[in-house]
Length: 246
Image (cartoon, rainbow, N blue to C red; front, top):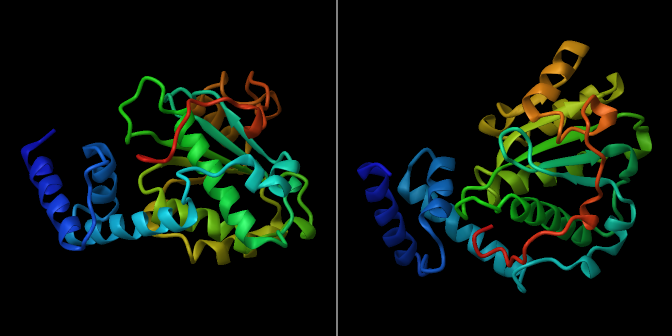
């Protein structure tokens, strides 16, 4: 680690303490994610970190979301978690045709946290805790107007931006129908520029081949041109985690 980064981390820890919170439980890689997300601005990173601490203590008081807290969302079996990609990152796949706008918004928000926590935890193996990233895939194949949930998409991206900084390596959007383009444009207004730059909309066969090549056919499911089998997120076992450095 460069001396400038070490100095920034030391100053950030002091800034967080001045705001009345402690960084004692958290390693340098975790704090560095917040610094990078705020372009190495120490005060902004410290404020973001404190907001994250407050959010987790309120949203995830036990340290993690149990499956019993999100039964309706799990029942749809619409989220899949694939083993490591070429880059070593886990691949999170969303089947939008199996999703419907939720009646229980608090449960849906918990489900988003459950998904992101579990995906990050699945990437911990063999890595320094605090550095894990993920690859997202949103598949819009066979969606109808009944599946459209702009608010749900916005929630997912806003949670990633605000509470899982520097976790998203790349997000691929597959099979977007024409009728959804206007919805997507509206959703994009709520996605910050750094996150938008990580989103790739796959529109043709050449781009699909690039997607398979970049992610790796061992992690890409057969239906997308790879060799893997889709695995529902609730069927994936991950090491115990409590979100301490999630």
